[in-house]
Every structure is written in C-alpha cells, then in structure tokens.
Amino acid sequence: MPGSAPFVLRQRLFGAPRRGYTPAVGASVTLGATVVQVEPGGEAVLEVRLRNTATVVDEFTVDVLGDAAAWSVAEPPTISLFPGADGTVRIAFRPPRSASVVAGSLPFGVRILSREDPEGSSVEEGVVEVLNFYEPFAELVPRTSRGSRGAGHDIAIDNRGNTRLNAELEATDEDRLLNFDIDPPGIVIEPGMAAFAKLKLKPTKRFWRGQPRTRPFQLHVRPEGTTPITLDGAMLQEAILPPWFVRAIMALVLLLIALIVLWVFVLKPTIQTAASEAVDKPIAELKNGVNDALANAGLPTIGPGGGGGGPSASPAASVAPGASVPAATPTPSPAGPVIAGLGSPVDGRLTKAAPTKTFTGTLFITDIVFSNPNGREGALVVLRDAAELFSIRLENVRDLDYHFVTPIVLTEGQALNLSLACTGANASPCDPTVFYSGYTRP
Image 1 (cartoon, rainbow, N blue to C red):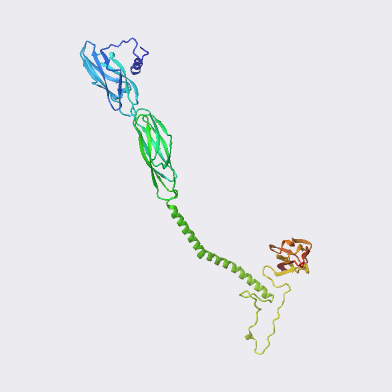
Image 2: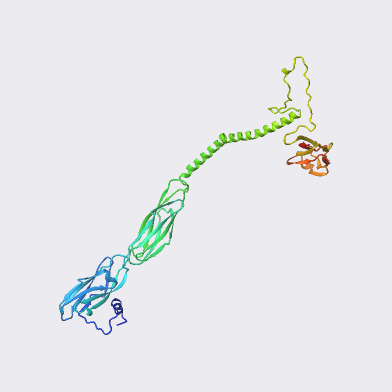
C-alpha cells in the first residue's frame, strides 16, 4: 500500500514507479528473515532464495540497497537459473567496529536484476539492527603535576563506540592527602566525539621547607554499560618557600654587611674629608678677612691657633744696641673693627637700669636673648623707638634665644628701648635682661 513502510522505502531507494507500468517478474524472491542483527566488527548472513519463473534461462544479479550497502556483499553476486529452477544467494552484513556506524535499525533492500528482462527487477526489503558497542578512551594530561598550594590536570575522554556514552568522573587517593574538584563531574559524549574536564588538586596540608613530596591519586571514569577506566596520576607537592629562598636571604645579609663595611671604612671617611675641606676653605677666607680688618684697625690679629697675635713689629736685630725702642701706639677706630662684607660687630644689653640704647650708623640686630634668672612675673617689651618689636610674659621664660636670618634694622638716630614691669610677691630683684648682638654700618 502506498502508505506502508516498504512502499516508502521503495520510493526512497528507486523513486516512484512509472505510471501505467506493471513490472514483469522473472523470478520469485524469498528472504530468510526480514530482521537481521549484527555486531560491529562481526558478520551476519541472510539467505535469499530465488526461483526462475520465466520460460528461458536467465541470469540474475543480486545487490544490497540503502545505508547498509557500504558494508554488505552478496555471495555470489550473480546466479544463472534454468526455467523453474531454484537458487540461493547469501547476503553478508559486515559493519566495521567504528563510531561511523551508529547503533540502531537500518532499512535495506535486496535487489534482483534480470538480464533478460531488466525492467522486471524485484526488491525485497528488510531491517538490519546494528548492535551497540562501547569503546571509551580516557587520558590524564599531564600525568604528574606540581605545585605548593595546588595543581591542575586536563581530562580528555574519547567515545570510540557507536552509541552515546554517559560517564561519571571521580578522583581518590588512599592517604587522603589531596582534595579534588572535577568540572564537570559527569559528561555525555556522542559516538566519534570527545569531551574534556578539569581536575584541580589541593593538598590538605602544606609545608614551608623541604624536598618535594609525591602525592599519588587515581582518576575513575565510570561509563554506563561498560567497564570503568582507572587512570593513575600524581601531584609533586613543593614547599611554600622555594629552595633558593634561604640562599637569597644569606646573600642579602652578606650584601648588607658589605655595604656597612664599605660605608664605615670607605665612604664615611671620604665624605667627612670632603665636608671638612668644604668647610675649612670658607672659614680660612673669613679668618683672613677678619685679620685684614683687625690689622687695618691696629688691633691684634687671630693667630693660626685662634689666639690673638700682635701688630707687626720690626725684629729686635734692626735696633741698635743700647738704643731705646719707642712704644707702639695703636690708632683706635671709632667704629670698631670692620668685618669684610658685614660691618662693625656690636653687642650689648638692655636692663632696668639702662633701658635705652642709641647707635651711630645703621644697626643690624641678628641675635636677641631674653634672660629672667630669678623667675620674676610681669611683662617685658622691646621697642624700636615707640614701635613694639617683642612682647613676652616673664613667667613663661628663663632663657629665650632668637636668631634672625633677616636682621632687625635700626637706622641712625633710632633707639632700642626696654619696657619692663615686674609683678607678683616674689622677693627676688626685678633684673630681667635683654642681650643683643649684630653689626653696624656707616
């Protein structure tokens, strides 16, 4: 019937029959079975019986149609029969043991072609059931990993069978020294395909120093319907501190010791010498300037040791014997000695008894010291004429020293004044003092 499965198969194999054509059958065909089971890599035989129903001798060619034709063969492929004679042809199904032949039912057709009547061919249909077989293959890459805190492996599983493979993955170690994490823990693989998973290892205990330790484990691949696969692997657990760490620390300590020795015995003396030379030169130049100023003023100069020398005098050998040597009379300078680049140094103090001081020329004050030795209470004010320069409370200080990078300037005619008021019941005398120092210029 047009709606039946054999009719659909015939249409798929040969196309629709021509309209108005009725095939002439030169032979009757009988299949030994309509369903044949075969295992991949094996063989199944189907017998086909033929009878020549024609009135002449005919030769019939037998072959297989459908997906099974690639691995099926008719033995013999041709057979000659006399009118009314019978013959048998064996159809051998030999599917390869390969993932390319998927397990399941495959329809096939046995076609008989008549040499005398080519249009009178006959097709008998059947089904070959290819049985399933399992052939999983698993690999652990790398076989041995290494690390101090953890390591990783790749799991590759190939399905070389002809049916879908469902497998579970599990890792174990007898000593329970490792923790395992498999992602994913289960896989599904189609025939001829491969799947991959990740295995992460973490040691349960760590150690800081020492030689690496081998941690063996087993990976179990458990596919449904076949024997499990066990793979052996290992993790080479290393110490947290690498072997070179101690040597590096020792080398660093030796380097620090070498740097300290270099600083103490080489660099520090060199720097001190260079600093001394850098300081001695300006001091010598300043000393020469001071000596020149003292010599011009007729005052004793500073000797090599820092002590005062005397003005130049003629050696005693230049005086005649018995003659009197006149006394040297120095010529004083009203403004005092002059320091090159500064002026004439000046210092003094303001007290309750002498609270005012005036100067000749311009005064540059570079230092002021407030002294309150008896700890009196009260107020102390230093003024330039009537302008206040400093105002302090006496009870807050005993000694207070100021040094000025930019000096306080008093022009000629201005006075430095002290205003002092002691309070409290302290019986000590009211004797706070203001000391000042600087230099004057005309």
